[in-house]
Length: 212
Image (cartoon, rainbow, N blue to C red):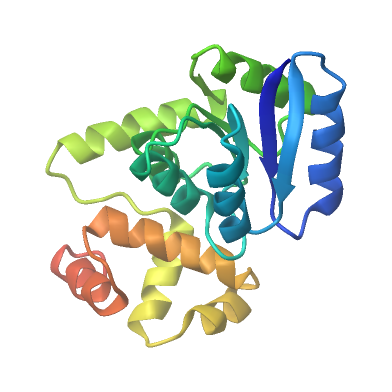
C-alpha cells in the first residue's frame, strides 16, 4: 500500500484540486484517501483518517491552512503537511515552518513538483520553494534581532486603512482583493507587531513609527 495522501484546496479551485488528485493517483506510491474544500472539514477529516501526508491550501474558508497546521501540531497528529500558497510573504512562511510544515510550495508549482514534494515529505525530508527561502532567512534574522518589523507594501496599505477604521470587507473592496486575503494580511501584521487585535495593532504601529 502506498503513502496515504489527502488534498485540501479551497472551494474556489475545484479544477485545481481534482487535477492534483488525479496526478497523485497516477503515481503508484500514493493512495488518495480524502479531500475537502473547507478548512474545518479538512481538519475533521485529517483527525479521522490520519493520512501520511496532507496537502493544505493556505487560503480556505472555515479555517486557514496555517490554522489547520497549528491544530495538527497541537494535537500531535502523525500527518505531515505540504502547504500550497499564493503568498511569498515571509511572515506566512515563517509561521508555517514554526507550526511544523514539512514543505512549502507556491500554488503555481507544477503537479510533478508537488508530487515529488509529497514523496520527499513522506520520507521525512523538508522542501521549501526556492522563491521563499531568502525571505524566510530574512524573517528569521528580523525576529532574532530587536528591529522594527518589515512590512510589505500591501501590509502597509491594509494597516493604514485599518487605522482609518475600515473593516476587512471595506478594505477588500477598496483594494479589489478578497476579504480572506485581507484577513491573512491582518494576521501577519498582528504576528509581526506582537499583538492579537486591530486596535492594539494600530497603537503598536504608531509606537514603532510605522504610522503617522
